[in-house]
Length: 199
Image (cartoon, rainbow, N blue to C red; front, side):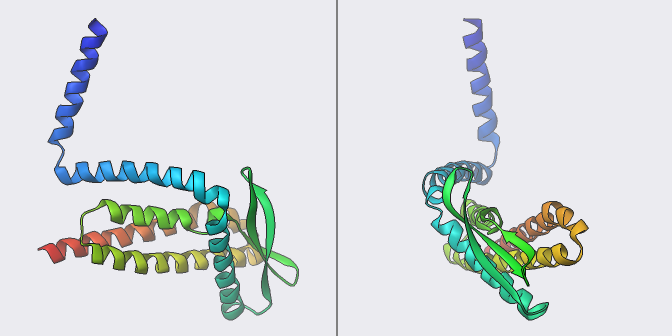
């Protein structure tokens, strides 16, 4: 009986504290949790097993990376698909970029920016703002994130060819930080513009 009373008291305290949080914050938290569950189910049950969206994004990232390297660095870069099984999913296509049969970079599905797009759009869905502005920021943001990701892959290819000792740090730490800071700045810009328009 004592445990039941403690549980009921704790529940009442949580509800009371929850109600003291501003409505906008509560709405954001609820939307974010619902969106997180939706994304997890949609990606795990539909997108990932099908692999179509991942493979397409990986391919266009490899195409743009290869074209950028050929234009900005030196000609001769090519990409080719390598079909494999990744995390138990068959038909995953990794793109292998090389120059004169020398490895430059692998672009695997984890590097195609799909999760970055989802996180960026998810935030825009959860915060208040006009639908038209959200759609505009979504379109421009996805394009910019795509360009930043292609630049990241191109620089990583250059590092693998010229400074391989820097590749691991750049790939796992420096580039990850840069990309997430960039997305954060896009969110800040959206929120700042939203407040300015509402004032």
